Amino acid sequence: MEKYGTTLKETLTEPQRDLTAFWVINRQLDSVELLRSFLGVFPDALVHVCRNLYFGEADKFELYNGSKTRKSIERTGRNLDFPELANRVADKLYSDRLPVWKALAGLPLGDRAELKRWRSLCAAMFGRVLPKERTKARQETGGDAALHCRIAVRGDGAVG
Image (tube, rainbow, N blue to C red; front, side, top):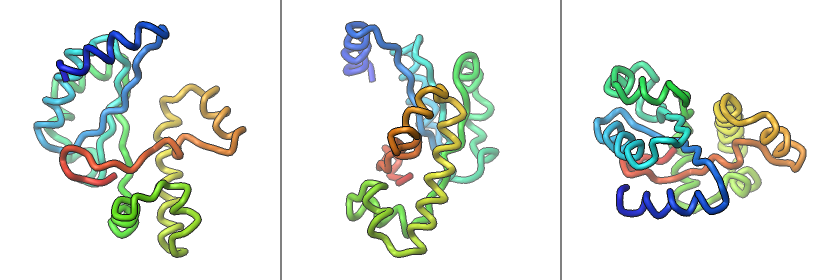
């Protein structure tokens, strides 16, 4: 984080942009430690922590929930719960490298229903923290907050 974080931090000053980060965590200590490292490099960033519910319900994130890091986040950011996507759908998106919009056009009916359910939950989660103007603009252009919710393999190996 220290090696490349400084480059990003310096680059953000050129267009006079503030950094807002959605930091996805699992229940393990490394998630909290990596977040703490990020906050050390970007102390002024607005950070929202997303508990990846693939790893269990929000109350199971005991290491983070009881940490000083959580208290630090809550001074300016929010704690969000990133919804779990059914394994069968997550595996197809990852294995076939499918973007959500393409999967919605080509997956079987049941998988599309699950993906729409998940996308709706993502939109609601991001809607809690995104400015209303951005959400409205996405809706007017045929998009929504969930379209920007990408399937990614995280350092912990999970797909979410």
